[in-house]
Image (cartoon, rainbow, N blue to C red; front, side):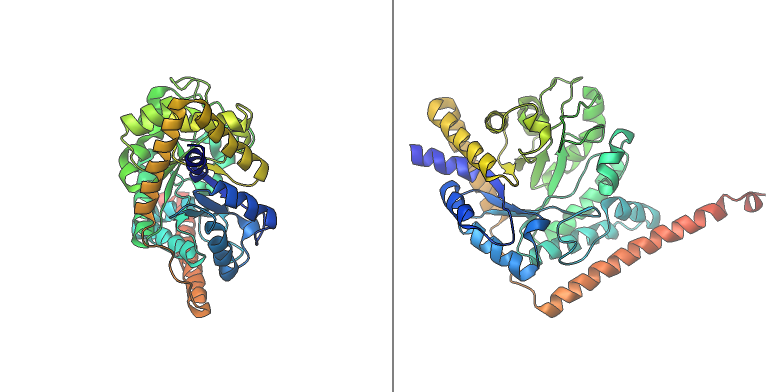
Length: 380
């Protein structure tokens, strides 16, 4: 029983690493935990060859069909910026798409990002952001959002996700149920989003309601919604938001991934051990812990301990692990794509830069035309 519980507990974790190569300590705890996936950051990525080697070795310690994920949204959040190329933000692409009336721009954005992450050995990008660009979160979210209302966000995200799918890369809608009303950054605090249930359901959650069948994965956030039945509990640990709303009311059947459990938004509310157990009880499939070996091991042991202590949690843990494995098998059946040659990698880099130039040209043309169109001389 214990070995099975341990295997299940490890398979529900997506973990981060410290550098561009595994250390002996990392090999030891990876061998013990056997996680369900690996997430890499800029600190782990030097070039495509090194990244693929790191992922290959690290996932060799993971359970089968492991998640190999990275945050490449475009704009400010692009872990491949230094190793490959910057790429336009979701905000810029969505604005250009609306201006030029070319939905193909959003699809191309998704395709290029998918090609980039595949070239580095990943199978998943944690994008798109489908939060609304509301005033409260403008300083926190910046150019990561595609629009101020659900229709604008959906128009961009639908095409972006189609671009990922066409390239065989898994996308992740985030941050459920929506961070548009968050004045604080969940990396540091647990924001209280002062929106009503009807506002969240009729505005923030609409992209998930419309696109959930196109989102293989959805990430939950660490904000609280005190004017809803979720009360002051972070969404990532809330049965109301995960089980009742996302699973039951919306009908989502894909992978639910918690945002990083190292973030202040959850740790200032619950110790990581309690947060992990609460997230699984609430209906999460995978838990993300992006850096600290200590917190990874504490989370792992907390899930094992609760599984050994509680018969009901053990049953849930094993069932969640089976379901998560089934979903990963379906998503990652193709395996890892072959490495690109130096010539093809350079061609991809050029394609990204050309795309950036196209988006910039559309936005610049719009900006130049706007003053002329509204000038008093022309108006008369």
